[in-house]
Length: 240
Image 1 (cartoon, rainbow, N blue to C red):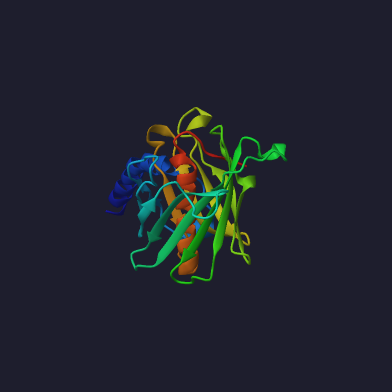
Image 2 (spheres, rainbow, N blue to C red):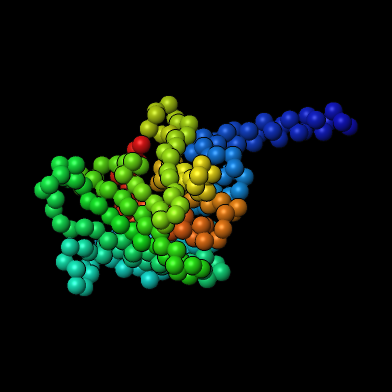
């Protein structure tokens, strides 16, 4: 009887092993601490248009009150690029506003061909805790450099690391790609913006359940903002 069960167990393992291997290959590698404290959440993206941000939904989060580009009153140098609200299933809310400096810089060659974007994030849990996400975006549609992305609330800083998985095929271009977020070297979230293989368009988010709700909201809002800034990663990605 024991031998029969052993054979059956080995048969089951042999059947499901290829599927387990595939599941591992189409996912970016995560820090163990983050993998144990989070779940992979598929990002559902609504219709993408130039008029306003697409509707997003992942896990317990969804976006609402979406607005597109328009001029800010009383300030000709800045323009509101987009804004939206993001809430969880408990009703906790993050307000996101992204502005761009429209002045052409003739004083520095470093800024030529680039747009500086500032994203402001505040939550209903702590309205005094303002987080600012600064992004430099190439105008030629090139990849976003993590060296040109800065996220802080004035006291803490969240940094990002580019991560790449195992190619799902023989080509290196099929390797899953994403970014992982850290506070003081502690992993708090990740986003996979490219999955490689036949389902390369699928995007995923992980948010650590061991962090405070405020931090979880900010991470969900930051990843949502990066999706909009990067045009939902249809033609570009991240570089170190």
